[in-house]
Image (cartoon, rainbow, N blue to C red):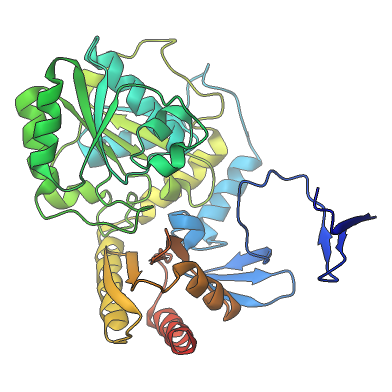
Length: 405
């Protein structure tokens, strides 16, 4: 324990700063801002003191239809008043309905429901290896992010996230994102044991990195030629975030496995793995499961969400995203190096020495909530319900923050 701290009734008293630091039993695995939100409405959040914040993060691409959405809330309350949980030992009309819609919209066959993105990616890894019948290696991308549990962490191409958790799960190799030649060369090192390629269509956690046009199409053609599965991780990009229901659809390809979470139920825990018949037919009773996956309450929210993600909304996301990118570029700030992204998934890369976390903190002090990707990229993931008024409010605050740096 820090010897400068003296224990008092409700926490610790720092002799030097004269500040009472509240004792917490929470694990120290998050760096939290000292703001606690009490409620939300539309694209605004309100803290315990009643202060109003513009939400341009959406709970990290989760609350895509904002807070307190009436359609979603009504569906959830109706379900809460009927049934919360029965387990996956019994049939579910809600699961059948959402699975049917997801299969139809992806032109795939089978759907498995779980609770989070990392669980969905764990399932995808298992399904690929079961399909592989002894072929177990999966080629993933450097700087990728697929989750925090051991399998999905091992598929994540960031060694800094592995530190302290060795040994990693074997069976993964990594190539430069967007480089089809490097992918081919890596496969040729170990063709007999390679089962799949696993990619994000846009690398979110590494800075909103968009690959070259037709990259995914080239990967699909390579996988077809060599009888490999293509796993597309749409955890952050999916459910309309980039202006398509799924980002891979920009390149008119069909993956073998798609994983989705975050925005699928607007804040309730739900995720899905969508796969081809060839993959799904390999999974037998007892091969995989989830106690809470696809529970009735989360599904009620997801069915409302999928109904609202229509063509008009997707087009609007593209229009708003383009307007926002252009407006940020017009700021002509010497602090900004590049603005990139698709739809309402935007990264603002800052020049060396300019801290994204510092800007995010300054924006929060001006009642604007944004995210970061690493040290140098500001991450903007606003809800789909924003308008020009919200965009102008963000721009004004951002411009003022850039001036005071």
